[in-house]
Amino acid sequence: MRNFIRVWEEVNIQEIEKTLIVIGELSAECYACHKIGIDSKAHVCPACGTNFKYVGFRRRVEGAYLHRIKEEMPYAIFIDFDDFKKAVGKKDARRLLDI
Image (cartoon, rainbow, N blue to C red; front, side, top):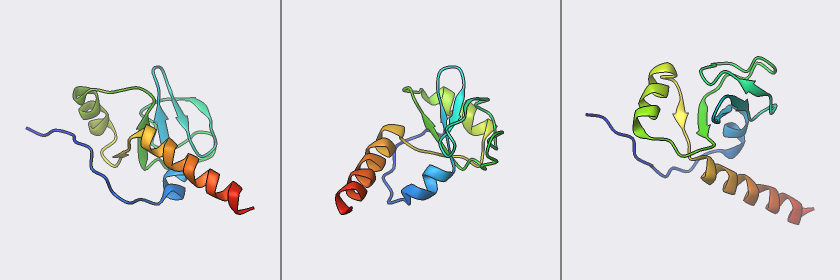
């Protein structure tokens, strides 16, 4: 039996920003160009052509849903969207303070 657990890893936030699809209740959003209404199973953004590598979720998801998404998107790396938003916020704050 396979399960999902969180694993903390140091990552490149800019890479995730450029290749992230964020899945919501009814549809998804490309984080790179902020196009909304994308099919949550999309591999590529229909607006900007981004190839999605990372997947984040706007809501809390259960293991069964993650397994289904992983079957549909075997290439995807799941991220904790809340952790990602905090990291982006810190990055933006540092940029503002350096000006």
